[in-house]
Image 1 (tube, rainbow, N blue to C red):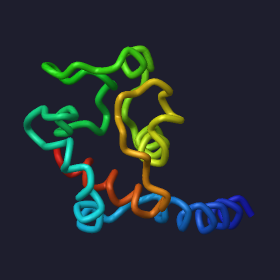
Image 2: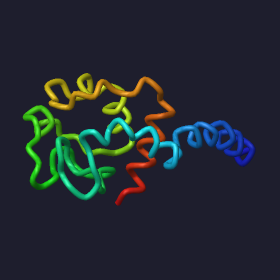
Image 3: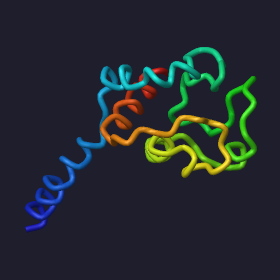
Image 4: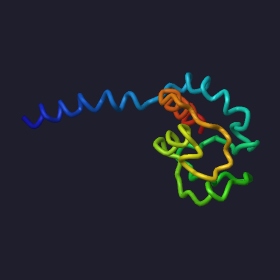
Length: 119
C-alpha cells in the first residue's frame, strides 16, 4: 500500500517537474531581445549575466544597480528569475530595467535554462 501510494504521488508530480524545465537552445533564441542590453562576460547597458543563476541580485562587480534591486534581497534562483522575466517592474518596483517581460511561461523557462548554461 505504501509503495503504490508513493508511486502514484511520483507519477503525478513527475510530469509537473518536467514541465518546469526549459530548453536552452530555444532559450538562446528567446534571449535575442536581451542582447540589446546584456552580454556574457562583460557589463554593458545591463549587467554581465555569466553565472547569474544562483547569484545574489545586484552583486555583479562594476555595474551600477538601482537602489530597488540592491535592496531586494533576491537570489536569482529559478523561481525569482521566472517572476522577474515575467514582469521585472512588478517583481522589483523601481528597477531601472526597461524590458516589459515575457508573457509566455515556456519562453521564460527556456531563457532560464539558457542562462543556467552560461556559467
